[in-house]
Length: 262
Image 1 (tube, one colour):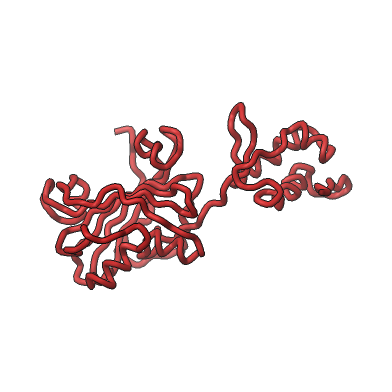
Image 2 (cartoon, one colour; image 1 turned 180 degrees about the vertical axis):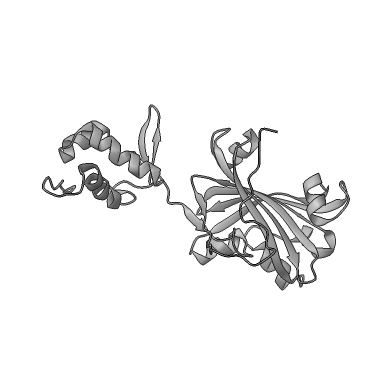
């Protein structure tokens, strides 16, 4: 096929033109995960210098459209999914379904377990108190996407241990079957290096950056009903947040800065 041409009389820089020529071919001519032609081939195909090619690829890499792997080449990246669950009381199942995707959960753990310090604090129970612990590896369109660990008091969903959560939303189950009136929540997200166990589950390298989401949900009576942590692949997810200039009096700050120097 005709790859397109660089307009040498246009005001638009060559690298920007090359980027625009390559963009529509990502995912069509070259499928997700496929290797792009090498820099020399692109130079010859489009009649530009290696500097132009590298600058165009830099732009595409910065936008998450390609992935460069040292010693292997340049590959088409999977498109990231915008997730609004950071800003609304939805779960990943609902968020993916709303975008036409398919989510399947591999349930790795569903049992009573002693509350961790974080879970105990958020759910207002004694550390070590028995809670329902649900751990799932979530797949979006057959790719590992997020590793979640959820804690709930037994009173919230007394029959949860017998439920099959492979293909259903936990929030829909809580509301529809157990009558939990979810009302509001608090969520925070940060980038962290993947621990070896997290990296293995998500199919990334140990210490690669992943997005860690922490969430606590309350019902309409103000009781905490769920606490979870979720590690999301940073190369597959991004969180979409709507902002406004002014916030109501007394509202907590939307950005917390932690001093890691001690």
